Length: 381
Image (cartoon, rainbow, N blue to C red):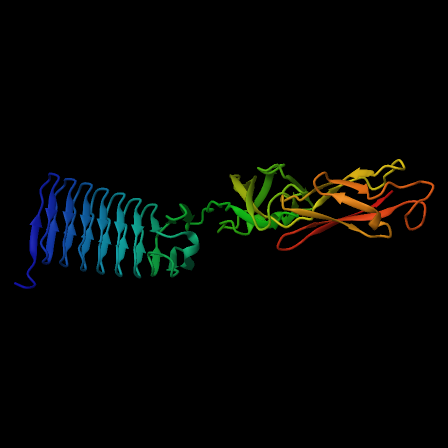
């Protein structure tokens, strides 16, 4: 009896049938039935009603017949026929054949090289990955080949016919195959710039990563005037300028912050989309900032010259040196008080500077870090 066939007959009630591991032929009645075909090469006729049928690990043939049925092939090279009604067919692993029949059906071939035929109605083929995980090529008007890339969970090459749309689960995207325009999707954009450089890019760049299989016209109708961090945004001759203007001078070297702004797109079908741009700003080692008068007058016989405020934007330690431009030796700088003074009080009638009428000196302020940056200022006294 190694290859004998077991027969199972259901009733018009809602039956639950769990077949043996041998080859089985199962015919349900007109109720809403649940059938587990188990491990043999099984054939199931679901009859009328909304039925749920599970194939086993071998080659099964499942007929949904009437009703809105769910057919699961499991392992093996299965054949699934939806029949009348809005059916959901899942091939599972193996080289499967799925035929939707009448009604609006959902066809999921799963892993393997499958054949999906929609039949009558509006039928959708389902794939687990995103739009970018597959290569779509049209063979005839209603015939398509879908090849999964290696990253897709449902690897294989499928042949589709009579299927009106493909649904990509990973990015929740529906692509129409029957000639109607497929909705475009505006994908978020990202850029990087350094804290001492404004960012400039073409507005057309924002469309390059969008999903737009039917080539709909896209136009930006609105864009934020400033970012989340208050950075001014300006459009000049089709280019967007992200004006940093020193806003991130206190960002330490190589540290990063992310800023965002949004924009609105209208496609040629009239649908409005919202897009977002993320700008990653990378900190740099900015030169120190000197705050001191460049021209100074003081009374003779006094030593105080001026206050010199020195600050590093990244709050690192800063040293101040007096560059000798002829008179530097006459001065000293007090780091604690941040003041510049004469070492000895000058006498107007007997000046001690190089040219005898005024004192010239330069201040250089240096920041001690991995890469030193210096700021310079020349002062006349």
